[in-house]
Image (cartoon, rainbow, N blue to C red; front, top):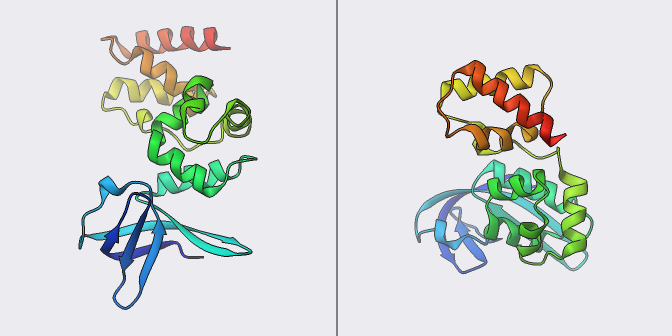
Length: 188
């Protein structure tokens, strides 16, 4: 399996990139052309998809995107082309948040996703996704709150929505924790 390809962007279109590694040009399915510039050095993390009649590479700019892609293709009815399109349309953090908060309407708005697949995504992936960027908060008080909630046994995917609700307030650490716990109890 090819883990990543490093080289110069030789050419790209709306759903692919050709990366020149010196003497070989790799054609990679890539749905984010706005991130590319011709002749720019890139490192693209890849997933190699093998079918009876085709071998394809799917590319991602970060390991976090790659990890979410791997989780998405584990869902029944979701292939690599649809999963790649979902990532291009939604963005990693928004997709994770939608799955963790059971936002069926948003998930159904993703390309290639209907009601049945949206429900299957939530069923298969809720609680099993990488942490959202939102958990990495600049406010040291909120980082202390996150640590306290984790110490109490809460998972990151339960903590993130609560932190998003209280992060705009100016409270002490104790007040943040009390408010977060109250919101956690309402969620259960």
